[in-house]
Image (cartoon, rainbow, N blue to C red; front, side, top):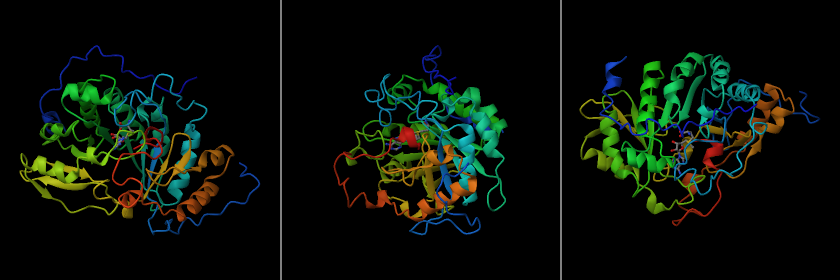
Length: 388
Ligand code: SAM
């Protein structure tokens, strides 16, 4: 039996409904471990890498399929109908994902973000969420559980996700203009449906709510001010992300990067901003307040101001491979260990060993190495496999 909820992108009966108005609605509503001896885990000692970075966050990809074909991530000419996505048997089961999550939590992970592909395409995802939501961190706190989605299925699922124990969602949305959005998502999906999803998430209490917008120069920088206007006063934190040289972004060049500094200048011409203190070292976004008190907005500058030095994130792809960096090409096969019936303790020992060797800081090295300054002509793991 398939464990994928089939995409609903063909259901475009309401495709002509336009995106409307500002988001004032938000304001108004409230085994045997094999033959080899595995390293044992001292669960009290911190799990740090070779640059002293602690393992704190896990991005767990539950599926590599997506119902969108965003031009910069899963372009249609590459991800055709014949593209070979992982089969159900190649994906980790919910039991296996729960075992893995337990091992990461044992090592000090405090936050797990479910991602994909499009995580809401994974059938019965709520059952996995229920199991993860019951976990307690090493410090005795409830595990923070978040999800990144394109929002297309959120209107129908938000309440169930919340009931299962999900705390918050981040919705990816690259434009407010319907034509721009339909072009960028590659499947003619109407922006109104994603806005409904955001509204449903808010109504369900999935908070704080974030919206992430990738800005590609020449494609959607004119959406910066309309998006900001829409989400001001709504309680939603809108964050602009620089176009990165990752995964499917074969069209990436340095020239296509609309930097955070440019985005902020453009926004400030209409809405003056005041810088906010950075909350945590590992925060990816620089946050600003609207000077008139309309809320906050963030900028994620992974290209112009890399933040590798503070990166506390591990990533497990939908096939169970562990990646230590978004730009990695090498991975460590956790699937094999989980499938062999490895205990949570033994898995944690293996992960600790791999993490201890970690020295990745791709983005900081970008300027000095292969990406200077031309096009992306080098391999990185596909974003749809490892998750954003
Ligand atoms: N389907 C989910 C979604 O849309 O959020 C989760 C997976 S998607 C790969 C996660 C995020 O990665 C999205 O916000 C997407 O915009 C971002 N992303 C993909 N390719 C990117 C690139 N080249 N540069 C910056 N962000 C990118």
